[in-house]
Every structure is written in C-alpha cells, then in structure tokens.
Amino acid sequence: MIACGVGGADAVDVMADIPWELKCPKVIGVNLTGKIGGWTTPKDVILKVAGILTVKGGTGAIVEYTGPGVESLSCAGMATICNMGAEIGATSSIFPYNKRMGDYLRATKRSGIADYAKSFQQNLRPDEGAEYDRHIDINLSELEPHINGPFTPDIATPISQFAAAVKKNNWPTELKVALIGSCTNSSYEDMSRSAAISNEAASHGLSTRSKFTITPGSEQVRATIARDGQLETLEKVGGVVLANACGPCIGQWDRQDTKKGDVNSSKSKILSTMEIV
Image (cartoon, rainbow, N blue to C red; front, top):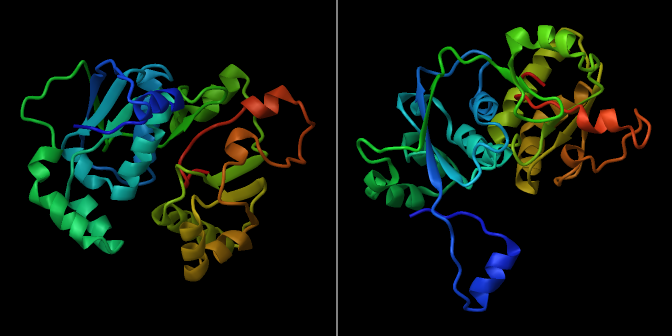
C-alpha cells in the first residue's frame, strides 16, 4: 500500500462518490551502494537520478530507493530526495524504514510513531528479490556534487566538469542571485550546514559577491534557526531572509538586478546543494 497525491478533479470525483481509476504505476528501483561523504550530500542523489531519467522519466512511476548506501543518508536527506521526485515527474518516491527515520522521529518528540513503525518495519521494506521495471545503480562513494541546469533540471553536471560545460555551451558565467531554503532545502540540517560554511567564510573576512537569499520552509524552521543562531550567521555574510513561501523558485519576487521581461534571467537557473550554493 502506498499513498500518492491526486489532482483536484480526481478528488472531487471521490468526494462525490464517483468511481475513480488509477493506472497501476511502474516501479523504478534505485540501488544505492557505498557511503556518502565529503561535499556530496543526499540531494546529489536526486540530481544524478534526474540526469539519468530526465524530467519525464519518472512519469507514471514510483521510485524506490534501496541498498546498503541508504544507511548513510539522514532522514532529512531522504525526505529531500523524495520531495524532488517531482523534478522527474514521479508519482511518488519511497525509502525503506530504517534506524535513521526512528532517530529523527524520536528527536522530534514522536517516539510513539517510531516504536509503532519499528514493530512492523518488515512491511516497510522491499521484498527479497523484488523486481523493477527499470533498475539504476549509484555508488555513493564515487558520487560527485552535481549542478543541474540551466534551463531544465535534468542537465546534470558533476562539479568537476561544470566549468568546461559552461564554456562549451556558452552558459551565463555570472551568478547574480543565490537561494538557499525553499520546500526542498530548508530542513534544520540543511540550514545548519549552510550556516557552518558561512561562519567559516566570515571568520576569514569573506562576504557574498552575489545577492544571497534565504527562504525557510516553514515558520517552525525559521523560528528554530533564529533561536539557535544560524539565521544571524547567514545574515552576517549578506543573507536576506524572505517569507516562508514560494518566491525566487518560481520567479515571484521583486528582482532589481535585471530588466523585467528578460527571458534569459528567468530561465538561466541552476540547482545544487546548500553547500555548493
């Protein structure tokens, strides 16, 4: 059993007691081996997958992540990967229940849910010998930080090849605005890692050259990082905190550094990890 979102028209049919049919989705298995480390983060997994499947490759499919590499991912990291399943058109994305999820639930004062999930965790993992419509293997130990875009999120470029790709494809060479946060990159873990890097930069007298914006994913995240000092650290290096809502991701903000209607500026967006940004 799995839950997935439906469109408004579909929901109305169900509420009106009209039969609703759903085509059985395909299942794409992503086997993770190795161990994530260095500057590579969980988000690089989905950036890599987007490069393999493209923005349409997950349409009508559920993406299931398995393998020993899963154990090296944090719960917040797995949530980021699943959240970004939308970038490949996936119906849903899932991970097997593991200790990392239990630790997260306990840390967020939901021990009862963690104990309940653990009691039947065998039902929250793939069956032995499970078959998939498509299989992808990713070695986390060899996975580089990725930068996806511009123009489309399925142009996936390892950071070691990005400078050459910019020159070869004549992409814009100036980064005018950077954003951390959004619904995908705004967990307490994400913000803490970004603040740690910002603090290191500030200690060496560095500040941001590009405009630097921050959108906490919720009021709870904003209040927590304000309480614990991460927000102040980000502001000290030039960060501008925006509302906890959709904004720069969809071009909904008062941008002063470019002319209105500039098509290139609205399309030349790239996706990467908090640390790289």
